[in-house]
Image (tube, rainbow, N blue to C red):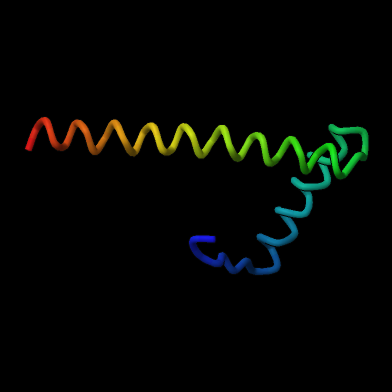
Length: 63
């Protein structure tokens, strides 16, 4: 884990509402929602890695 994020009570309530909606879209199946979240996070991480790689490559070409 890279760093710890601390939330205030308003942010925590907003996060809980989003989590509840996400689980509801999976018919209340928390495990199914968790598995999809893991897959989504993996896809997002791949995109971030690709973007970071392309930006470092372009910096090397320019610099």
